[in-house]
Length: 345
Image 1 (cartoon, rainbow, N blue to C red):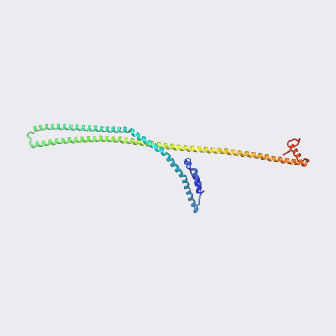
Image 2 (cartoon, rainbow, N blue to C red; image 1 turned 180 degrees about the vertical axis):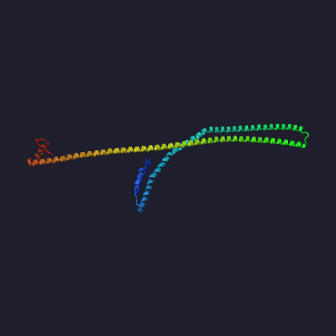
Image 3 (cartoon, rainbow, N blue to C red; image 1 turned 90 degrees about the horizontal axis):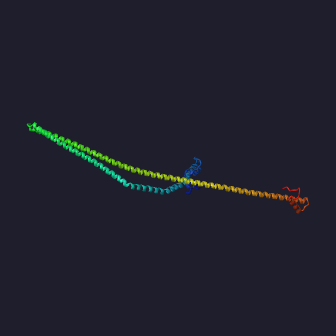
């Protein structure tokens, strides 16, 4: 088989593509290619090795002849569904935009409510901290005044009991009391500062908790939005997948319908062919019967004519009759006009 013949055999026209590029639709072409290269060349000779290379190249050429129209057909199918995909994508995008626009007032209101709630919580915490600091300052002042009064009373008593003490002892006593007062005031201020620091830390912690809560709510809103977007994408992908499956199902049904129509057309053609062949056979049989009967009649006529000729001759030769008399006698015999006589043909 030459390359030209192979190309002619493997040529696929565009209108054949829908019925060929389906499951096992190319099997007969594959079988044909197998038959074309079904050889076992002798590899020990240069000619055999060249033949093997030629057969492999032939398979590649045959593959290209089948693959190229198939790829063209696939591109055509992909192009045919692009408008539907674009319109579906536009519809989903418009719906998502409309959904966000419709919900925007609610989203802004929720964000404002969260902000107001956070500000109110912070204000309450700061108010509590200030109240605690004021209470602590008042208690410190009262404690300081009480200690001062007690110290004055002690000084009076000490003065009465030690009126004759030396001035140096008095100075030491006063210095000692002043040191005690100083230490007491310093200790009180340290405790107040420590409490204020604890209050500030507690307020900062509450503020951090509030911020963390706000961040958590923000993260939850973002997560909810991402989840909604993901669900929308999944819905779009599911829609596209269902659309693709529907197109594939429609294509399969179309191919099945085409195959059914082709099969019915072939069956009808086979039926018509059988009927035509039967009619032709009947016509030929009838013609043969008519011809046989005509031939039989012609043969019988010739035989009867020959017998009649022989009878006329016999009557002329043996009965002394002339030709006209002999013919008249023959007609009488043929018409059974003479009793007890007949002619056997």
